[in-house]
Length: 260
Ligand code: COA
Image 1: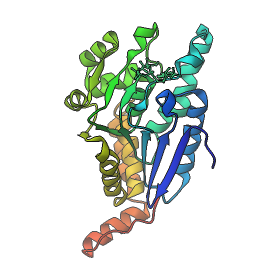
Image 2 (image 1 turned 180 degrees about the vertical axis):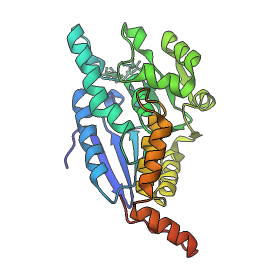
Image 3 (image 1 turned 45 degrees about the horizontal axis):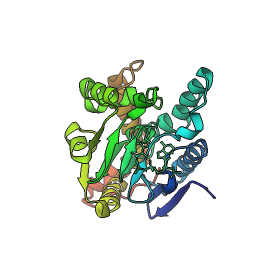
């Protein structure tokens, strides 16, 4: 499939999506959001792809935010639609994807960029990364889930400070906050993400997709997460992956899961 603003490579069981607008620090414009939705939807359906890494092109930015030039003249109605559509097409979509998504944060992750990283299942950062939600400096608030996901990841007080000051934190601070899981030199970032993705790929993709749903349900007020876990746990017993995983263990061999 041809894309204008992103690159998609598949190597063995791992897909790497690179947002490719380096001259605009990979800012998320409307077309990029649509292309990302198409790419994620296609990779989710690809039975061979067991983990997805998303990163930004160049050495400076993961994503420097939503494309400010596109919404500078928006009305109240248009602003609301922008946030709703973006959340639906990309941010909520990634969070609920059955295939694991790792954000490789290779530089600035600001506004919509940090919101994109936070919608991923977890994050790894390069040591030059800088993260923040600077929206209030523009007279607006985060609209792609930032006010909801940041407090979940770093706690209410830290989220309030980051949002109110519109300031940036560096990779080490982000590690201390629990916003990213690992920090490595920039030239080792993809390597580490691929290593983690590889480790994930050895496990049951079906069980992983149930686990993603159960963990996400922990943060969904309208759902009892424990009930959701019981339901998903039970469903695993009816899968070929469960048969293979338990049989392989008892036969003292490595499991070969049929795939997602
Ligand atoms: N939307 C649109 N364009 C953006 C952008 C964004 N969020 N972030 C960066 N760009 C563009 C700049 O306009 C510039 O384009 P130009 O060369 O055509 O003028 C190009 O990317 C390079 O950015 P520049 O600002 O020159 O780089 P810098 O190194 O001086 O500063 C940042 C880097 C990240 C500090 C700065 O670009 C910035 O503050 N960006 C906006 C961050 C933001 O507020 N994001 C939240 C949006 S809701």
